[in-house]
Image (cartoon, rainbow, N blue to C red; front, side, top):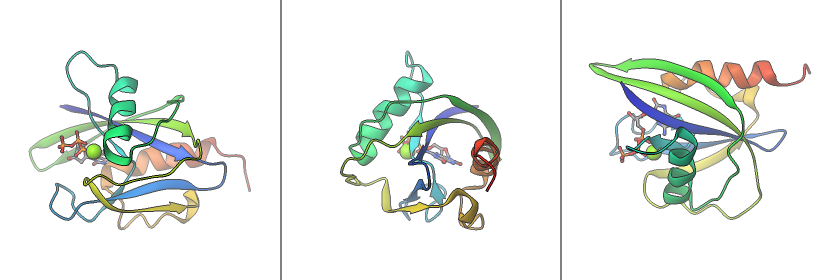
Length: 131
Ligand SMILES: Nc1nc2c([nH]c(=O)n2[C@H]2C[C@H](O)[C@@H](COP(=O)(O)OP(=O)(O)OP(=O)(O)O)O2)c(=O)[nH]1
Ligand SMILES: [Mg+2]
């Protein structure tokens, strides 16, 4: 099982989604930015590294939203979500993604979101104050 850490970066109203580069696995789908844990790293360290590598942003990694296990064919992914309070700063995509967007959590188009992400999106929505 591949351990992947991802960030649900939230500014109090909107959530940051990034779109996977068309040539990658799950290409063209939107996701929470992040990547694979490497040997010797905590999940939070992996996530901070990936956010710098992929978006050139520095984020304080907040509380865990749990994890979801998902199988893409024979490949199993354990996707760990962390809530991060957005620190305003420029975003620069370095190649893993071709777009980003800010979207209200309840308005995310779940048909174009990586399927492993759905339970983490629900965990965020459940943690929000009622409208
Ligand atoms: N980062 C990230 N990966 C996700 C999400 N949802 C989801 O199914 N995945 C899957 C896609 C990949 O099969 C797997 C690994 O993520 P990744 O491709 O970002 O890993 P990485 O940044 O380390 O990239 P690489 O070394 O493979 O280039 O996790 C998500 O929300 N964020
Ligand atoms: Mg990645």
